[in-house]
Length: 265
Image (cartoon, rainbow, N blue to C red; front, top):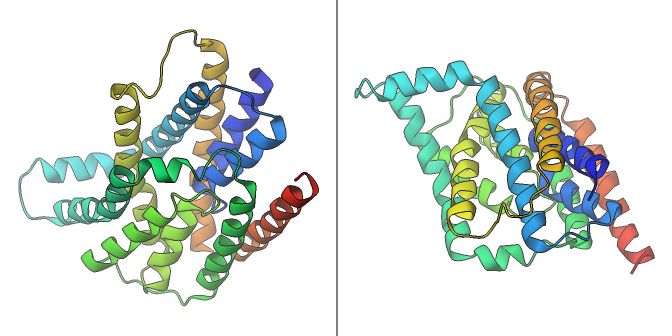
């Protein structure tokens, strides 16, 4: 892949990690359209770099929240920050279990499985449509809600199901405040992304040998910058209940992906 291809994939990752349209699904579509012929380990390295970039953009956007949470934790008191951290930990359990016990099975679903991406995007469209119709409340995320939202995040490992879309949708459909749902959704994924990156690096899944620093650096920068924009924009979108437009988009792209597989099959 050249600089332009990686730039496009970086922008796709940065935007779709936060917008409710499935970053994994769009990356698979992007690789298929661009004709990604890279070796599996090279493709995995690029995916890891792009995900790290968007995780970093989340940390930048929510830096004040993260600092307050850490301060509360290190005060060693049962305060709001401690309770919020416990909810984050609870939400990580389902995805952590799926990733640990079914990692190889989940990886088989990737690799330009475009027809699956298409159907899952249509499912995401349905979730977003229902969420947009939900009534506004001021209810915070509870402990039981955290686990259910975590289950939604685990299901969103499937390419084509939006992680942010499914977790925010699940939270809102459970009756939670929409801005709080978006904040929880974005913060809950940071430990999982960083943990997955650490596992891939220490487990020897990726290698930095013969790595083109320029190409991967461009991908990192484009994903990080577009991620900053998308994260801020998504928070505003959720507050204004404008998810139906993304529902329409996911439906159209999902149908288009299915047609693409039939025409090129």
